[in-house]
Amino acid sequence: MVEQLPAIYGQIRARLCGAHIEGYRDFAAMLLLHLEFPAQAVQAALEEAWDRGCLSPSAVRQLVINHTAPPTPDPIALPPDLRAATVERPDLTSYDALLVGALR
Image 1 (cartoon, one colour):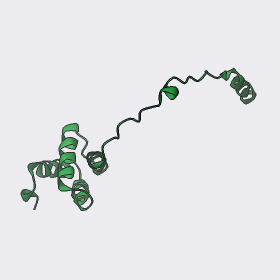
Image 2 (image 1 turned 90 degrees about the vertical axis):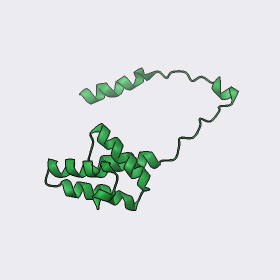
Image 3 (image 1 turned 30 degrees about the vertical axis):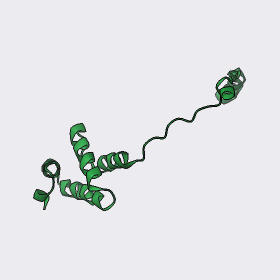
Image 4 (image 1 turned 180 degrees about the vertical axis):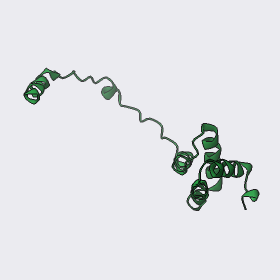
């Protein structure tokens, strides 16, 4: 079955299964990502994980989420009055009194 998938799947399977006894479980967890995400996103995440050297199921899952996340919206333009607003720095020395009480 893995032979029918893109080459990255075979490379990851070989690396995981050769590295430790739980390699098949880790690889299966990565294959199960296809139940939740588009195949292209999973493949892109596997390729990125391979390049980064982070071949854990949780890392690949996070990369898939990153690949499928909606784009970041453009910043909201602030009204001119709000852009010109300034806030004075508070006097934080009064909080030093709390430290004195804690040191007793």
